[in-house]
Length: 232
Image 1 (cartoon, rainbow, N blue to C red):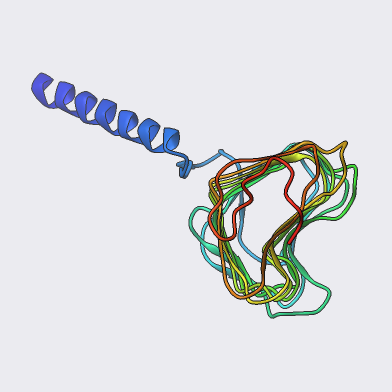
Image 2: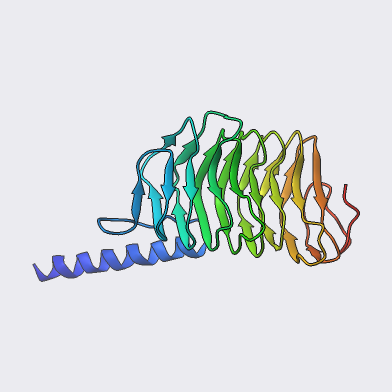
């Protein structure tokens, strides 16, 4: 009996170590159980309390997807999808002047905007490892400052892929667009932006915007090789 007990403890320890390694690699899913976070089970859904929220299955909406009306929120899509109907005024994940919001690990598709922070006072958002597909307007649009967009696959959004209207970092994303701009950046010299390890393809403009406050790394798809490239 004691041998079985210690074997069980050993297996649990190994599984915990594997989970930590996956988290360090960037793409991770939080194992949630009873009492941990709030499960979103239908759309549209409005978040009015700070905390951790997660999906338990694919969800579809004929209106808005998730509207965030409070700061300090994490949404883990858990590998599932938020699916819209392609409506002209609807957003998959909508914010207005929010702070400290993270969205990760899943898909947002077929809304007007995929993920949108509308207001210039939004700050410190993180969009990590999300697929943003087939939205009518821009895939990811963030007004405000100090945002991180990392490891996202942004494809076939009708008016462009990523639009960062303030300061922040755009790192390791894959963008395909046949219209609009793949990655559009603020032209303000008061908005420092770091752009690195992105791949942009398609027939539309690959990169545009930027200023002397923009630091360009190596970016595939008509990459800028100067610190301050001419927008194209």
